[in-house]
Amino acid sequence: MEATEAGGKAGGVTLNTQQLTLTENSQVSASNISGESEDITLQGLDTLDVNNSLIAASTQTGKAGSLTINATESVDLNGDGGLSVEATQGGTAGDLTIKTGRLSVQDEAAVTVSSPSGQAGNLLITTNSLHLNQGKLTAETGGTNAQEGANINLNLSDVLLMSNESLISAEAFSNADGGNINIDTRYLIVLPPDGANGSDIIAKADQGDGGNITISGQGIFGIQERPAIAENRTNDIDASSQFGSPGNVTLNSPLDPSRGLTELPSNFVDPTGQIIQGCPAVGKNGGSRFVVTGRGGVPPTPDDVLTLDTVLDDLGTLSEETQMQVQAEMERGQNNSPNQIIEAQGWVKTADGQIILVAEFPTATPSGNWNNPANCSDY
Figure 1: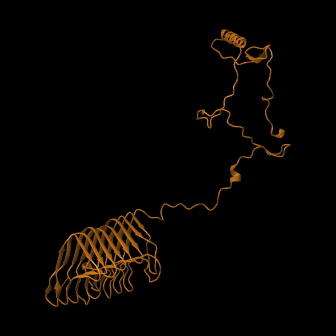
Figure 2 (figure 1 turned 120 degrees about the vertical axis):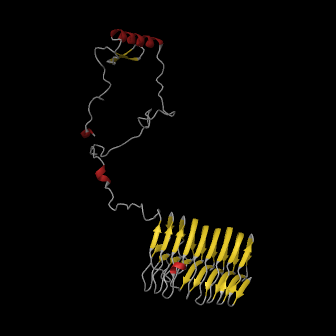
Figure 3 (figure 1 turned 90 degrees about the vertical axis):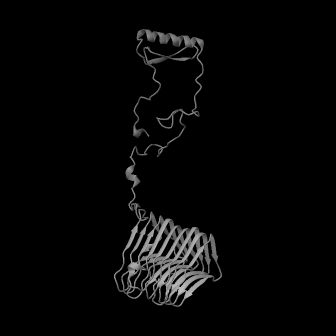
């Protein structure tokens, strides 16, 4: 589909359809040589697929029309071709505007506004996500009025993903200043380079000044500000100029992977100085020994309760006679001092071999040398 005019004013192209697919070098164009073209407008679309084909508004020395695409779901550009608004021999290129849910530019496809020796238009894209896989977004100009063209504005609600030698460029030639690039997205993610050049975002100039690059998002990953030199195998943001002043690069992101990292100490703590030295192992056995025999009814910590696996010893059942003796001892102690608990002062052994603790006894029977303090030298 084509509208062409050598001079004067060429007609425009308007398509209103839900789905449009272009394949095998198909073309939708509105072009003129030295005159002025009307716009190309694609509206009412759900999806647009351009495979090895072209949608273009062009001129040589005249004024090209603008290209506007509205697709609610997606725009997919694949292979040689894509979308273009250009002036090839010094004319003025129009604007290129895309509004869609998802935009994909792959396999050397390009979205371009271009007038290398004249004034280029602006490129404006509004979408949820943009994926460039060996794809290009370019605005090339040779005109001196940078305020009117060669700017790229990307408004993305979700993510901009760049990979495989992709490019976003607002480059200027001759005395022109580089265009401005404004990217507003949630995340900018640039995958590691697959080829010699990497994926770049540039607003370079020749003899004019470099353009300004502003990127705003929650996270910017995989790309840095540095010269985009051919075959440097890095992902670069470059607003330089060969003979003019460089532009400004502004990255507005609260997430910086280089922040919040704590450097680990190189001098580790010597554990020998953190351990208390107790009794030396100089006993007759020539060493120390620690034996674990189980908890024996002790909880893991003082704050814990006894668990069901606690082992209880079977102490047996007292005989009736022994119980009567113990009861008599308790009543006698209660009569002597009803409000005082009296410690056992000894023990007696009954005729049948039972051991009974008593509160009053002339002589206490010690159970061993447990009350003698331990001495390290004894070990």
